[in-house]
Image 1: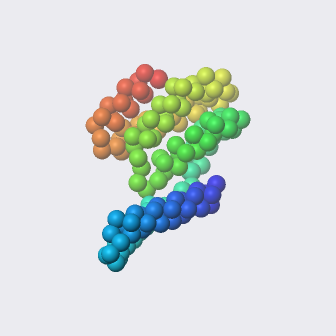
Image 2 (image 1 turned 45 degrees about the horizontal axis):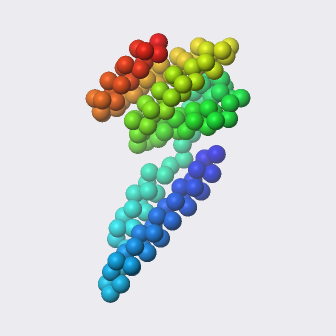
Image 3 (image 1 turned 180 degrees about the vertical axis):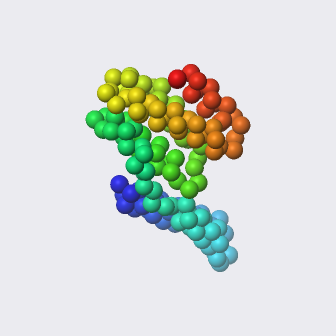
Length: 148
């Protein structure tokens, strides 16, 4: 799965760079394009495109959703973002809310659902502890209290 993500990231980088170069050539046909903007973008995207492994501690969360393809994919994406060096806390909170509230019945009816729900509560606490945005922290507190 990680190699697939890396391939997709590289394809998107190449498409974006080619699109930027085309736009630069089209907008200034008489000027020689040094490609500074697209080179900087390429370097930035390559630095943030990392292979992310989901730590074993999240296994209970993934085991509960193993039989639900869409939810499993959504949960894996959430966990990959959570373990990315540059976490998008707003995205993490949005997806966590969707999973913990919108799919509560799946966790509630699973024999290991309590472990998964406890893991989600820990993720809410991670958002509260790690996010620099007061709005995101407030939302995480409200949602975690509402859920539990």
